[in-house]
Amino acid sequence: MNEPDTLGASLTRSGVSRRSFLKFCTAMASLMALPPSAAYAMADALNRAQRQSVIWLSFQECTGCVESLTRSFDPTLEQMIFEMISLDYQETLQAASGEAAELARKQAMKSSYGKYVLIVDGSIPTKDGGVYSTIAGISNYDMLVETAKGAAAIVAVGTCSAYGGIPHANPNPTGAVAVSDIIKDKPIMNVPGCPPIPSVIAGVLAYFVTYGKLPELDHIGRPKVFFADTIHDRCYRRPFYDQGKFAKTFDDEGARNGWCLYELGCKGPTTYNACATIKWNGGISFPIESGHGCLGCSEPNFWDKGSFYQPLPTPLADNAPVIAAATLGGIAVGTVAAVVSRKHQADISTKEEK
Ligand code: SF4
Ligand code: SF4
Image (cartoon, rainbow, N blue to C red; front, side, top):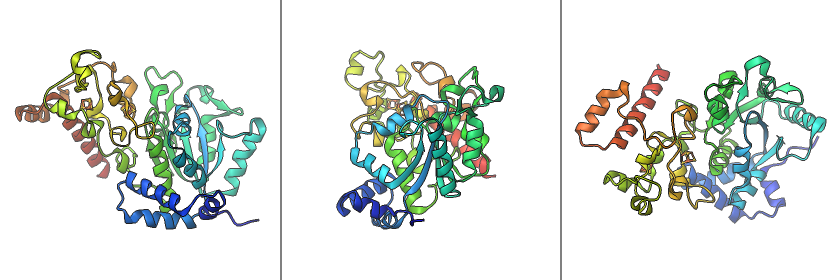
């Protein structure tokens, strides 16, 4: 059997110059807040690395996560993604269908057993023997368990596979659960978002290929480098928020002047994601820049938290002391929500560390 291809050889064959490759590594290092020297280390490691085998399973989902990745407005980045990995199985993108597709999955598992990264989008239905979503007659549950066995690591892409997402919302008729509710013996990273930001998916894959491990994760399995801050922490409308200038309707003068959308239901203060910094559509914009509040799509249970247009509830009953202290200090209501959210996250982390 031939030796597996190195990424460097594959890139050279595809006519990708060293300069473009370094540019890509610099962009990836910068995205992940690594020091500039890390770009060279990353280029060196990626050059020698074998293309990472990836098996991508799509379960109970809308295909938005795959659409997000493939409709990236940065073709160079997208090309790099497909050079960096060997996407050995992906139901939406692969040419094979029917029995040939199933064979492709089995072959990919066999040839890279113990080494492949398993990416999953979509939740997994568990009610009634998992009959609500099957592929080739196999329930999503059984396919996940079988494919996870040979995976070096699992990346749950999108809020559905990370936390159950929309299929998990009340009354959850299919008994939808997240990957981490089923698989307990493998490293799992959650990259939530409905859908997730394409550059974030590329960034975490580049990290895995470079360092052979997942990046540091927070208490709910998200890569800290992309999910450490709330949307509110980095929002360009924040100065208006701090001045107490809030749009009251989507077409009033405040809205036209770009004032804060808190009173129109923005969930930015309690939502951890990188939309305000990395943005969407090749870095052009993000939902708040387009005039709509954040829906909180990357948070667990976001669909069950009430209307998207209902302002965040304050005070939250079990955080009265925090709210009282913050309010006494003259801090506006959205900041209080953010303080409460951070305290809640810190409490969970502390509990899990014990
Ligand atoms: S509440 Fe929303 S619109 Fe206002 S500053 Fe925070 S994230 Fe931005
Ligand atoms: S701004 Fe909020 S709702 Fe919109 S994509 Fe980002 S996290 Fe999701």
